[in-house]
Amino acid sequence: MIWAIVQQVGGQAASYAVFFLLAAILRPEDFGIVGMASAWIGLLGAFAEIGFGAAIVQRAEVRSEHLSTTFAINLAGGLVLAVAGVLLAWVAADFFDTPAVGPVMAALSLGFLIRAISLAQAAYAQRELRFRALAVRDIGASAVGGLVGVGMALGGWGVWSLVGMTLVNNAAGAILIWRTTDWRPRWRDVSLAHARELWPFSSRILGFNILKALVQNVDRLVIGFVLGASALGIYTFAWRVVVFPVRVLSSALGAYLFPKASRLQHDHPAVR
Image (cartoon, rainbow, N blue to C red; front, side, top):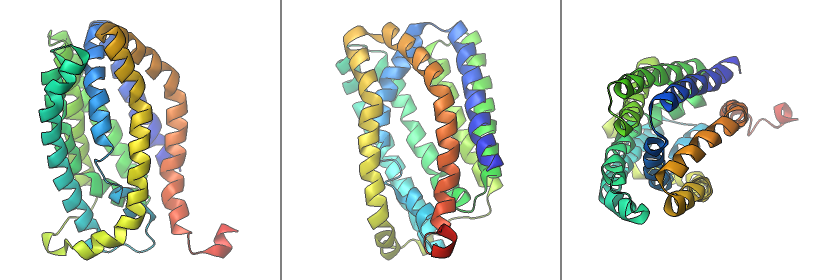
């Protein structure tokens, strides 16, 4: 439990420290442009894992075939979402009537593919309660991404410092989780039959993720559309300040209790 708290508090604290530094350097409009792009990215992101990662954590028995199949599906999904994000980038720019949103969203869409490389490893680490590995990933990635973001902001890159920070954060997180976990995918283990075994649970998670994505992004879509980038940037800053303590506590509890409870799903005496 301690490492689950360290993962969430450390990762979020590093992220917020960088956020406040960047807020002192960049314009509200820069945050608003990224917020506009992120709203569309968030809607696409509901399909990123297709719920297979959660199914890996929840399933009573997991074999290498389940993990390798999840890796392959996530990788294919990440590629599809990255392409979709690039293609929809200029639709998003037209929606907000803000041309700068197009190239920013196209660049941020690469994050789908980068994150897809490590989703199976992260699910495996969570299932095995390896929160130390997850803490190293989150804190390390936030620190490296933050250094890049602040450096770019000081160098006058404006909105692109936020893009660079996000992509470097994604890449550093993928590298760190690969280095701190011992499981590796094997293409010969990829199996449609094992995907079918995971689908009943993952399909429910997918439905929940779609609903959550709509709820979490509708405010940014409306504010960006009606009030513009600067107003959305100010709203984004205020929202993060208010949500921080709640997110840290709920994320830490959820990250720890989900795999822990899944291990006890057939142990009725222990549950009692």
